Image 1 (cartoon, helix red, strand yellow):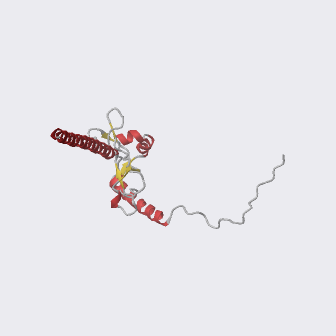
Image 2 (image 1 turned 90 degrees about the horizontal axis):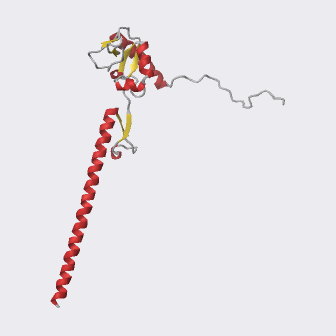
Length: 188
């Protein structure tokens, strides 16, 4: 079977290259580049911590020793979205430890090198567009879910008790009506 070469059938051609960043993204990138340089100048050493046996330790564990390499990269403890230029979530690291953090996400989260954010819908009446979302860490989300479960359980118990009380009240009222009717019949 003979195949003919493919030809462009459309007369439309791209005149300019696609831009890599939006104008706002370009501004954020320039700001981040300056902040990154300042942060690495303020924190010249990698702050990744290891135990005596060489296994990674929690980032706030003072008894564990720090890495002895110079920091060359900035790790974002919260992912690079809304918090891209927020220095509170920057972490100075060398290339080796930064690579370990990115390859071992769950372990790094457990040790405090990554903070995951979970979006939870909040009270709808407080926000104009109909949905308000709060950013919570893993522990805050767990506490929120436990509190919601306990509140739901208390509400359910309250509803059951209210139902039982209402049923008893109805039975007492019907018993009183029966006694009155019996008294009326006995009066004849």
